[in-house]
Length: 541
Image (cartoon, rainbow, N blue to C red; front, side, top):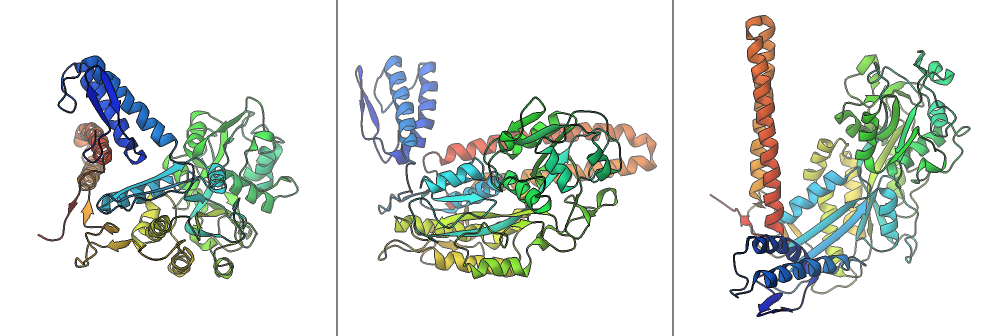
């Protein structure tokens, strides 16, 4: 099943199983599907043997089971790296908040492609609460949350890990009250607190009328909330506690509102994607999630009042005459000094570190950093080196420039420099000697002696699928431009309107073809990586 390790061999009526290494688990599972397919066709041979269909089916099933067993038992503690010369294999695993998951997957994708060695990185998008639990039980190499943690990891010592912000996000309050778009309805912290403690249940409530100046229909409020441990919930509770602690008297935590809300009007769902879908699926709903993804779904947003008495929205363009918030401005010099003063370590749960109800014109009242939580010392020096490389890449200019593509905001250059320093000096290997750091080769620098090294991430090494997807993206942009041009021309020439309709149909069909093509390319990329894959290192013409 693999050219480096003989896993199984068919002998007559028997299937002999050889050593199954966990690093081959993905190979086993993927290859088993191929062999099951060949078995059902009734053709082909395995290892040049004349196994029967029954024997080959047994072999395929054995491979599938073995692969699953290897994977399920592999993640019990911090990762271990294989540095056998010529057979290097590295792995890194984390879990946590759903908000940065796409960015983290994107960064991991690039690193896996750019490595000469077999590098496997994963991130479980499970919510901050679960990520914190995984972190505390030593089941992950790193965690990500949208709130600071206390100073001790279970089984560790005070200040034995770093908390590194790498992006800024905003939590928005969204609704589906028919007839009202973004910024057309206002809601105060106290009214919101009453809704999320069950005190207000109808849209025509007097407190809602006092906020909006409008008498809304006598319809039941469908309240959407996170049922899993969530940093979005942590942010909303932090805002309610800071803005109306006479109504919201609970603790600020990531735990669900489920203990306060019960009944057919309350809908607990998992993940930010679950929240946005649940809000959109039902009229007269209200819910909270990271603002960018709410706007991507074109959900209507409530405007909120900040400490300066300004009514703001996170949506750009000052909709309905309401000012758009300046999200990055929440990170003031005082906030930055609090982090540098704490050396990005220790208990970062206090008011000096959170971004709730901060003072300042244009400041949105529910903001949060997204953190990477990493240990200062790992049981494996090689794991420490890989963690340092991963953190360095997340904080690099390349990934920081991509943050806005995922509806968040990058750190400013001054604060980013402080975080980079903390990461580079704070993560140390458990041992010294032959362990070296990973290096990065950009697309512009000349090749060096380490360019083809086992621990070099080279931007000159990539997968074809990225090039192909870039071309697809240009094609989509071109189609959009063509349709927009025809629409504009049709205003002046009514006879062109039928052509505009045809162009729109052509755009939809072409766009569908592009989506199908991108899915096929993504599958090709995934299948190509199953066994470690092949890569081309481009260094010149």
